[in-house]
Length: 268
Ligand SMILES: C[S@@+](CC[C@H](N)C(=O)[O-])C[C@H]1O[C@@H](n2cnc3c(N)ncnc32)[C@H](O)[C@@H]1O
Image (cartoon, rainbow, N blue to C red; front, top):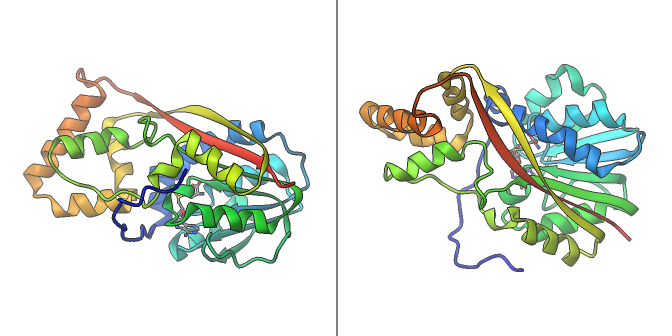
């Protein structure tokens, strides 16, 4: 499956606040990390790459669960890396600024390479895959998870739905097509990986109040940009639409559900 060529080029998403990212998405990613790593079923003590490591949310879970012999995290966003470097749980991780499509790493240097919530941000996911395959040793694992965007599994989907219902537009990541299970599987096979498998994971997160959830949206560069462009009454209308959509009775706490599509394969 090729990328649909009708999509207009999107401006790059820049994650410029690691602490806000933690509330918005890092917590969600850590929820997927547990079942995802269990599914990979890899032994402790391997050399790992966390590609698009962001603020280190998945990196920390990886370190705790897998006790790697080495772990390198790569991300292009300095603010994310700054947060990742000061996390209590990422001691010993080597964080590098770089692009998944041209990794700043030598060939065959890790046993396992993972992209957590990254693939659909790459303008060229197939090139990102080629780079993962290049840096993984023969016999090693290449894996990823990404939100089930087409199936409504994105944690902030209720907000996007309300944004569209109110007639506003929000930017979309450049390669949302790659988040579908079939597209991921095809990318993995096309990159020459073997024993390719896919799986879907559902996770739940509790918010004591609606406001707790709403505040997390400000960690999203595209939503923050959109909110800033709205008049106060328009922003209020949007907020109330999301509140009603989530629970017309306004019951709290809220328990929200998200779904991630995962894929794994082995380098021959
Ligand atoms: C949704 S965040 C995921 C972060 C982290 N992996 C996690 O699970 O929380 C997406 C990350 O992809 C990074 N990213 C965007 N374009 C990238 C690229 N070309 N190469 C590597 N990472 C990229 C962003 O900077 C951001 O930190």
